[in-house]
Image 1: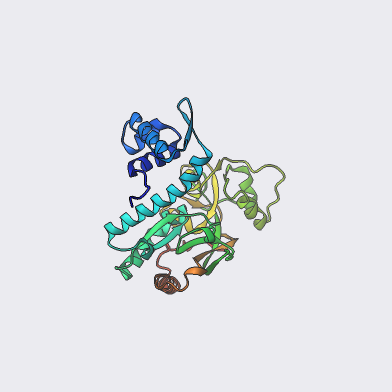
Image 2 (image 1 turned 120 degrees about the vertical axis):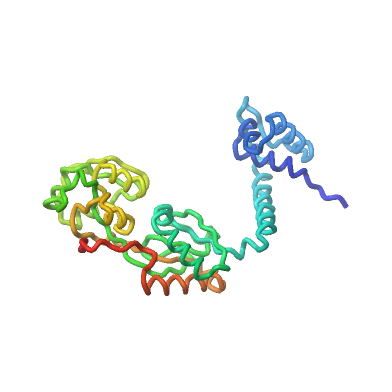
Amino acid sequence: MRRFLPSLSALHAFDASVRHLNFTRAAEDIGITQSGISRQIRNLESFLGLSLFERSGPRLILTESGATYYEEVSRLLGKLEEASIDAVRGRKTQGILKMGLPPTLMRRWGAAVLTAFSSAHPLAWFEVYPCRHDLEFATSDLDFAILRGTGNWSGARSHLLFPEELVVVGAPKLLPSEGLPNDEALLGCPLIQNSARPSLWLHWLRGAGVSYNSRIYGPRLPTTDMIIECAIRGLGLAVVPEIHVREELADGRLRPAFRRHQPSGESFYLCYPESRIGSDGVRAFRDWFLSEFQRQRQFLPPAPDFLQR
């Protein structure tokens, strides 16, 4: 019996149309004409006997039936894509280690970790994905992640790597070589804010015993990487994890405002889902990483010797 299946071209057009909710942009996405997209959608609707979209000028509105259909179609197209990639690679995607790194960690020292692992295990395949520090392991398909927190992630095992230490830094044109004369001098400088972690300056000031009676002055930026780059350019002083600015402090692009740092109360952990404890690949990477990290911390740039807690 012949299968009741629409053409793959029609499903491809439907997928692009749902993602863009615009036939013109969907056509540009998959490299056909706008009339070609419209024809494929009409053929699919005729085949199913359903209305998938409501038209409002150039704008598309997915119908309830269309939304239900797309939920399944999207999942099955994903499985078809995965099967095709498996065929090209000659191995199952499930056999590849999937590692998660928050963007700043990925850029700052992720490459060193992955290069060392690849050298030690040349036959191991892995893929790296950006993730957040509040990763939900129950809904993630990652095998590993390196995260900042207090060690408690639902459904995951975590291994302490190192505590997070905060340091105040600025460009040489903003700071004398010996740093600021005292903690209170901070309040006379523009202080770059981290909108993702708005309490960092308050944490530092309270830890230093500095009283403040007005708003902390300075621009708000969304990522640690952007904050570091703007601090290098002289936008203001920044309080950042010391691990992320070791190279900039060593080469003089940044200076410490004080020759000490303060713990943030959080640490970095190697985490993996409890459901993958029995995986040979997960065990191999965990054991290798923890052994190498504790033995020589070779993945981290050397800490400046002039910073004291």
